[in-house]
Image 1 (spheres, rainbow, N blue to C red):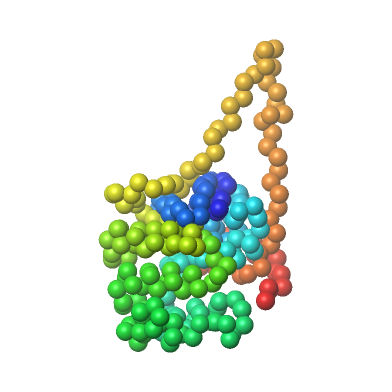
Image 2 (image 1 turned 90 degrees about the vertical axis):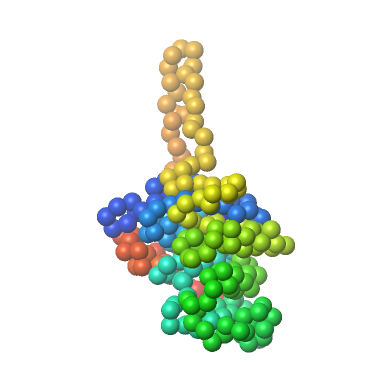
Length: 259
């Protein structure tokens, strides 16, 4: 389960993500409505473990480390962060993503064979940003799923492309309901008209406010109002991408890379 607890992200001048909380179960597609684009991207980076929130925490299951979150979560198609570059052809995108899968090279799928198996040979030489947007999204989802450790998919603004809502929603539901039961988060500008699944909004919280009844003496036990200090998260082991968002966040302490 993907859990975000009162996550905020501050930019250089303004707060990009106000306190936001949500829970996403395996096998579920959860939409988060946010605006403007920079706020959608900031939230996507935080939910996928690519950026440490200013306050709050994001965790996968019972593990609250960013390292664990990154190992099990894929960030897809984030504008100016990891969306397929316009100068890359489909075969280049496939080759690059397959090469990044953890493990020895002899275990990784061969790009040509992978394209034949998944039906992308016919567009191999086309520009990645010029193919049908539905096939493009399917391609990115399939490439993310090649990593056996990935259990959660975070999509940044899948509704910005020229395709009907039912098309991209259908793809996300297919992956959520597959045998892998991905926990899927799509951060969007608007909720599709006929969507009846779970929805959160930027600045929303799933926690109910604490109700405290004063004792019979009329005195309020102030100890009940004191929140415990949150535990510090360990530094991230991979580079963050706050540079793309022009965020005024401190650099995390460097660690030895896992591999």
